[in-house]
Image (cartoon, rainbow, N blue to C red; front, side):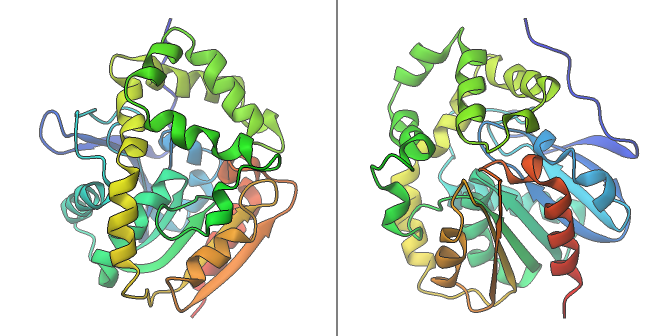
Length: 292
């Protein structure tokens, strides 16, 4: 049975943008310069729950459910990240934002890279957190090696047609529990309520389709991103990796496509950085936003 929807932090409210079938769900709160947060698979806006209350004391914060995930609609197509970046631009325009800070994790990074490549003038500062962006990540990130296989095996599995749904349906809790345990340095960072929220969204009809759609479009993304990489990024970029996640590869990846990059590795931290290291994440965000 699906659990109840996660409770919003004080001062936040739900929002929806777009036509039926293409609606984007987000939560919004706070006041000040705008900050957009984009989580990844298999998560939702709730991945930022430990960060947004303090961030909203200084900024206007929007945390979205990416297309196809969370409480956003789950169309059958449009998951190549150029297309998703265009959807993100529609949301930003609907909010009336001319410039904003962009903070992203996991598939959120997949969406953000083509977004900033296509619309560089609207992003003041970019923060990329622990994600292998197709087409620009060094090939060693996909190495078939004992220290990496638990982090990247799902790229090929998720891209297969039909098989993931056949094997996961009815076993969502076992699948997500294994995933969060394998890719964290501290599995307790994903509390039972958080796991319930991710399962709620993953187990609804079509709940797997959207997230898997990103992986099924990965070869389109590689082609698109290699073209984007012909134009280097100029905005300041903060690249954060977990020591038990991508670590220094995040900085290496972003230096290959951007001119102004600061790299940080959080020790004793796995892939799910905003949940495993929220205090360090918040400290780095605030410092990055205020640096001249």
